[in-house]
Image 1: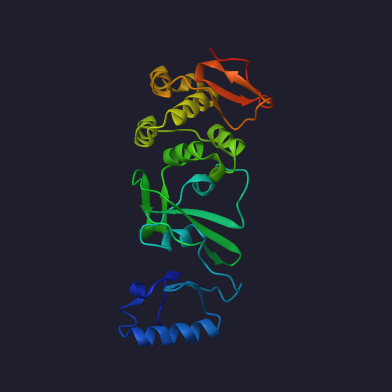
Image 2: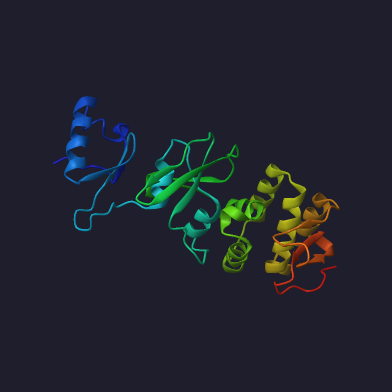
Length: 244
């Protein structure tokens, strides 16, 4: 009996099926028998006959949709165990090109194009996953809170994570090179990490922030100024009136 991987393309099983026509004949038979499921053209998942479900996770599927696909944002924070909610109907993954959404078993896999190659951890041989480092997941999420489930999810992750390598954080900040991102990161790190982070890091963020006042996940009339970071934050959050 031929042993198949839990998630595979033709290239993964070419030794078992040297003739590609035989491979696709097998795929057609196995799909009809409910032994495998087609995720997309050329990518198949082995079915657990006892449950009718596939063996692999959303994380593994997203990591195999393309040769360079990986995930960040809320999906990475969830992978690291730092979220309060699970996105059950959508999974955002990253590639270096734009591709159309893919729906499989009621989950829409939606790509976001990224030209950043930093802090991508390849665990394909170990567990079939390609994910960004925790540090990049945090910075990506602060950069685009909508992809992270909102500011509350980000703040939960910051409270829950124990250790961050600041050199990786700085590397990501330097790559994105956005004044507003430096403002947000400096503010959130000071709020959640305080003196556990060296003052030199906050000074770096301040030096790159500029003087433009930005509304950070807040609305006009429902915000107050954190003068040090030039950020308007929601009055509903437990914040001091001003951090000088």
